Amino acid sequence: MALEVYATTLPSVFHGLTFSQACELLYNISYGEVILLAVYEQASAPSSSMSNLNKAPTNEKPIPQLRRCSWTHQVEHPAQMLSNPGSSVVMRPGQLVYVMSESKRLTLTTSISNELKAWLAKGNVLPTRGSKYNAMSKHPPPKPIPSRSTGYSTTESAETRVVEEMFIEEAKYPSTGESIQNHIIVVSDLDITSTVAFAQMLRLERHVPGSSEYHPIIFLSWSSPKIATATCRELREFDDIFVMLATGASKRELLRANILDASRCVVLADKSNIQNVDGEAVDSQTIFHYLAVLSIQAEFGMDTTSGLMPMVELNMPRTMKILDSTLKKRTASSYQHRQELDSIVMTTAPISNVPVVPSDFPPSLSEQHITDDASDFKRKLGKGNVVKNIYLRGADNISTLDQQVKLSKRINTKRTLIRRELESTRRHYFDVRRSALLPFFAAGYGFSDDIFDNMLCQSFFTPGMIRLIYELLFSENGRPAALSGDDRNYSSCTASSIVQIPVPSRFVQRTFGELFLHLLSTKEIVAIGLYRGTGTPYQLPYVATGPDSDTILVEDDLVFVLAHPNALKTAKQTRQQQKSDPFPGASSHNHVKFYEREDITTPTAVKESPATSLPPLAANPRGAALFRGNFN
Image 1: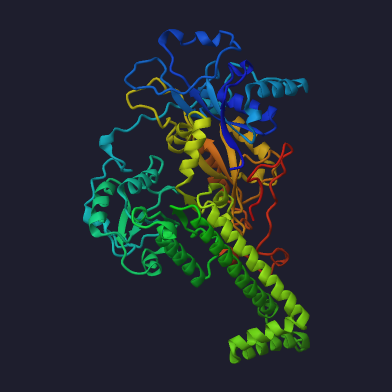
Image 2: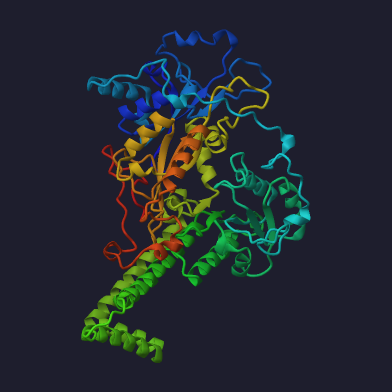
């Protein structure tokens, strides 16, 4: 991450402002260096409901601490963590806020006060207290939490499925026989706890059949039928979830699961091997499955950074180094192969695209000469020995013995550097920072379990870190994740969850700061990061949290935001209106079909290479962050 999360308190000037107003003010006075994420409300007694609003805060008051609040203890306002509550929460004394910043110094209460004084000295004014922030502030109350008796089914009238119907031999619906497409393949050992938790996150209330977020799920496993049957009993409350038992090689079984028409592929860590094997063999099965997917991509001519790229969960952090180096080699090989194909197509394009028109003039000798040379080269290359041809082409590039010696020295130097790097990797066996610096991790393709250890250590210095992460991930339908089903005191407060949205078309080539302020002022959405590089073939995307406010946005950027349900519905309607008249040259996130849509005869396609470099993130005037910038 480029930024870290800190807990702090706001100066008294912020009291009386809504959460959205405080977030915008904090972003402006820090020039995009501090982003407000959440607020922690302490439990309050009935007698002190509104008295604190008119009481002036004292300097001797300590920072409020997080405390566990039992749901059996009746209080007027129970302790609650709210992620981006928008206008439903007014800032007041005694609140603990969570901000994202590059430096802890910027998040101190005194630093915020000094920045605010300097900002006001330039002629800026504070927002009006007590007024409605905008039309989006009138949120309907969150929907009540469904009782546990209804289960997790997306339809209320859905009956419990028979376990036998969940087992499939091929990627087809058992009832209709139609092929299962646009699905998610999950390679798993069918551990009940992790499997049910994974399925539950993909069957939330907003995941209804027919929506873009709803996908059938196929759990592909090499486990025993007994374990699979026990897992199916726990999964039968979910719709469109199937289990496919595998016995053969990974590549064959993935093709049997119709991976070519799948939306995503997820490879979960094999938890059963942790107790039996130690060392590199712990993730051996995960590596085999990952290489099988890359082999399928190479066989069918797919880009290694396409939507089919698997997301891998690992037990050991150093395994990510192996996957990262493999992906780099495959990406470079795929790009070189694509360049060779493009050169052949560009050579033959003028002849194949010229319409046949009666003419008295014969074709030019230069065109015939180019065609004859190309066919001659292909014919000689096909008849000759492959090894001999490679040697001859290499010998043409090395004309003297001196060049051969220099090349040998460079090769030996590279080998020495690789040997040192491997030795350094062995020394840092459990080093999380090194795995976090890898492009494979920055692209979101790999996840190691030891990240939880890092979060646990950070929670010691930042109170409530674990609870904040829980709220960011599991807040649903505007309800806080920790809200009790029997408590209705916080029904008027909304909570936001992390979602990913594309950059609005009118904000392309504009700054991230402009987009941040627009989303916050119109929809009460807090933008927290970018996922850049999704539309550039043969280059790995990367995540940048809290980029500089001067960062220029491009068309294929995806934005991580904290948004409530109503804002998501409004944004979705806007995107649907834009899709009714799409831009002809808009790129797709499915890189497999990137070159099929591109017209190579147009002048723009000739000038631009497939690996067009993206505009880098703007430099931070306060200093460079640890992971800021392009990882490639």
